[in-house]
Length: 424
Ligand SMILES: *Cc1c(COP(=O)(O)O)cnc(C)c1O
Image 1 (tube, rainbow, N blue to C red):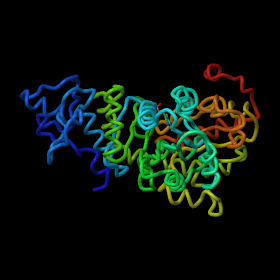
Image 2: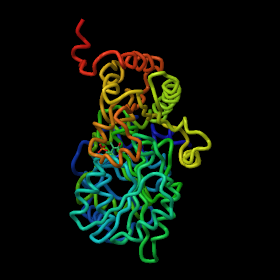
Image 3: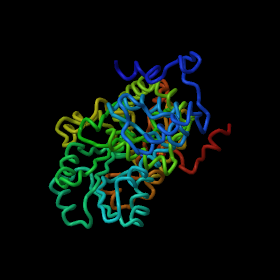
Image 4: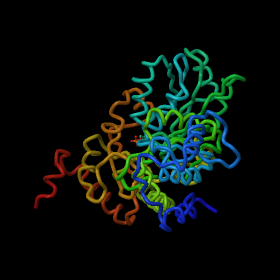
């Protein structure tokens, strides 16, 4: 069966919970063992002191190691990407940082794409270096050979390639299979370069990086997976072998998702497919209408890529939908982008993405404020750009809101605040 058919039931047996049709919230820190022998056996498995017997499962011990809500959630989340295992964390950042820490040691080299999420970028540039881990970045459009040459002259031994695609906020694409080949080029008998993909922008529905050679997939579950802007969480997925390491690290750092977060995410997963389908269909209509609007200069949206564009082949190979994130340049300057943002009524002026409500923000001064000017220029990230995360509202209502906000461009001062707009 398809994942959307299994989100209501997979991995849960009502008879173990008084027949409750939904998993209860197991708000408990610890679990009672039937006998001392059972407790001993659970710990042997949990701490890897022996291999599991045929059919043996890890018993419930303590909620930092495992909890029914967390386990059912992880089993369900694995289905979308066809992953063997999954670990859910209290935030996207804790999933990302725990994964980087587990697989990188002093003297290692991390290659990553740019731009990447601001929090990840800060962690890589400002924190990993304190542990003697070398880092190197490449940009969308660089060839396999260019990247291999860069690594060849860099300090440290390549251990991990970390990418984010499509790049936020321009939707520039990184070729996952090309990154796999770069990783393989630097892998040896004694070490395999790990390819990790932050799939927050397109997953878990529209892109499945494991099928293109990635070893690990990472998510901010705060975005599409949670989908209601009311919970912060993250996930890492991959093979049983790699996930055993990620979960081991998580147990001792203690940043697993709690039962309440897990329960909320299970509730969200039931509607994941219908939400994302609606968001994508709204985005396709809005992107076309924006492209035809006289006050809009350019729309950044995968569905508008032409067949002769160098990224078109990657788009078709890696994604089953253009997604629900789009950016557009206003004909004008920063002030004009601010005018649009300040006049939106239905669409909320906020960062984050992938939620039921439409959100708009100004990447240049907000999410990408810390990105250096050079990179912004290279990416075409301008001050007149607005980024839109399309929600599930009626598409004509979102469009009307954009149209009335765009009408103010070139008419009033951007100093007009939201407050004064609400006065008669
Ligand atoms: C939001 C986000 C993160 C960080 O996730 P949190 O849940 O906020 O910790 C990482 N990567 C991407 C692409 C994101 O959008």
